[in-house]
Amino acid sequence: MDARVVGIPEVDGTERVAVVIDVMRAFTTAAWAFHRGADKIVLAADQDEALAIKAGHPGWLALKDGAPVSGFDLVNSPGLLRDADLAGRTVIQRTTAGTVGALAVVEATLALCASFVVAGATARVLRNAGADAVTFVATGEDGRAAEDLACAEYLDRLLAGERPDPGPYVHRAGNSPAAHALRAGRRRGAHPTDVGLCLEVDRFDFAMKVGLEEDLAVVRPLRTGPGAVSAAHRAR
Ligand SMILES: O=C(O)[C@H](CS(=O)(=O)O)OP(=O)(O)O
Ligand SMILES: [Mg+2]
Image 1 (tube, protein in one colour):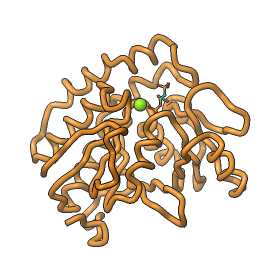
Image 2 (spheres, rainbow, N blue to C red):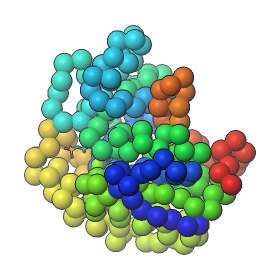
Image 3 (cartoon, rainbow, N blue to C red):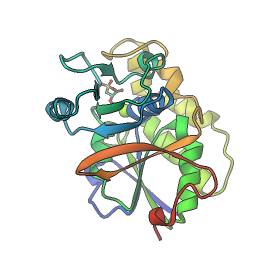
Image 4 (cartoon, rainbow, N blue to C red):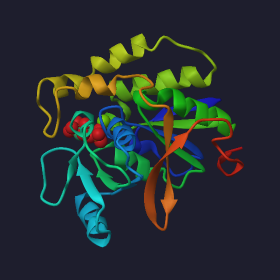
């Protein structure tokens, strides 16, 4: 499978199969939200849109990164989400990079949101889809975030049918500027366990597919059992 790695500025709308990567922390957080029972995640382009979607959908929860803002219920932190009861809830997610990247490719034939915690499942969905080319969108630092690039390279090796030792990739991510900033407490809306939780390879057995539903960008978990990716998703 041909693979290319781009930053958000290079996304041009021609991507047919795209994997949007945000290890720290949007798509680790999203995976934890599904693990804690969330039904779906709706992506918002900015804070105002997140609050407008919430106003139109009583009971939906708004999540953002950074400092708290009135009207938001949850924080883009896996450590702060790991004990939340989200059973059956819809979460509206707005972050600095990950959700921006996912919105940029939401109309692709197949668009997945990925991080280390769903790496194996993401690779299985891509292989099942039979795609011949994939674009990895490393969302952090306009495509230079070490943790996202390490995850992209790990996924690429999985797609090649290899069984790489995740250690070196996790080590690179754990020594990234984003990891250091989180550990040093330089990020608002964080928890001391965030970095460790972002580095748990294959913590979950589902992938996360994003697509348009009634003009909203909706992320849903995609179980990777036999036949999990229907012909409709095949990106040949
Ligand atoms: O929430 C995050 O980890 C980052 C923003 S920052 O690094 O905390 O300032 O956003 P994301 O879109 O999850 O990379
Ligand atoms: Mg990030």
